[in-house]
Length: 269
Image (cartoon, rainbow, N blue to C red; front, side, top):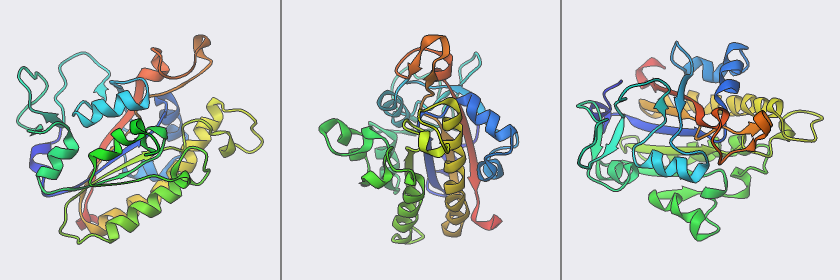
């Protein structure tokens, strides 16, 4: 586990959730050399298999923002990168960044970070009271149809907006940038030419598109500063396995998610 406590105040932080991405698909595309931009930044071991704390977007992100990122898919007490102070915690160590706050966004803000949310799926759309719960945690938040699940170029638009907002801030201002990538979530059939339905293969094609769009983000961020990056799925989804379709259900294809943490360092440009 890296020393998150030592990073606070020194590094900007990027947190990307690849909404609905399945672990098996993420691993297969990495093995098949179909996601070169992610392959370039992922650790040498590639994706780590983890278990999500929630089987749909809202539940998973509420847990994430409380410091409960996906847990390594193996027995044991696994120390956490971030935590909120509460009695009896058994997964915090001297390397854990512990905040006296109700969520990690507020905790980072209290440490001098400016917090930005680039929304994607409906729980970030700010169109209803529920759609405002997660975005309202941030200093600024953004959502539009161009960033949502029905827009085939959504990830490109999210990256463009993220870079524009970062460009408006002084380089000395530490930033926590959160991006909820919507493209892999259903509907994703438009990423597979000729497809009329969402399938495991259109899911994979959506990840290929996302990889291409994220390449620009990974290339540009170190021009500003050094970054701690966390890239994960919030949950997977079923395409007929054992009769299940979708998520918000208990099945391995939903609970198992890909996870990676890595650095993009300014001095390595």
